[in-house]
Image 1 (cartoon, rainbow over the protein chains, first blue to last red):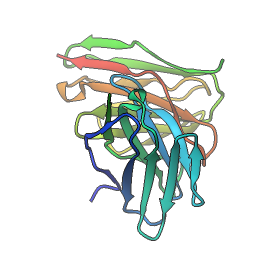
Image 2: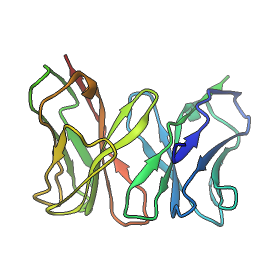
Image 3: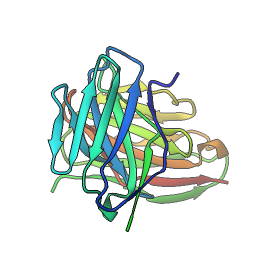
Amino acid sequence: RKEVEQDPGPFNVPEGATVAFNCTYSNSASQSFFWYRQDCRKEPKLLMSVYSSGNEDGRFTAQLNRASQYISLLIRDSKLSDSATYLCAGRMEYGNKLVFGAGTILRVKS
Amino acid sequence: DAEITQSPRHKITETGRQVTLACHQTWNHNNMFWYRQDLGHGLRLIHYSYGVHDTNKGEVSDGYSVSRSNTEDLPLTLESAASSQTSVYFCASSESPAGGQFFGPGTRLTVL
């Protein structure tokens, strides 16, 4: 089983829709989590950190569910510009290494 | 502004050649990482460093080496390039153990 798993999608949604992605992790000792956004042929860019208490940044909300070992990303009022691949990453208990999921593709259509 | 750069951005080489990919960051981060990204595999860690003269193997380190002689640079060397090393390579750095990593623009390497 992969340490971090994501549904590859694609998620095809209309503009203005709310969409949510989940990411499951296998190591219960994982310490911290992040969501990254990656545009085609570009580098991953840090979108937000995921805290136990949840984290909101504008239209984006990230949550951590330790009991069920998953993190989620909710995007409200989707824009065309939100179309990208969203990567989740978890930091294992040892060191500063991140383990990445393979990504979820989001396509927002007008 | 502080940044992280990679060079070259594109490279075509032949099987068996030695190739070095450069990574330079101006954030003064101690932690630096090299990943490769392939379709179906996502980002996989090759090598990483927690500071000058420190290097560690990641999950796909065979055929790669790194050295860290200063804080700013972590060059990645492919000792004898193989076609299986055709990939997009990303360098990243982070300041704190709890913080996220910031990625360079990537190097697209093709081994013929």
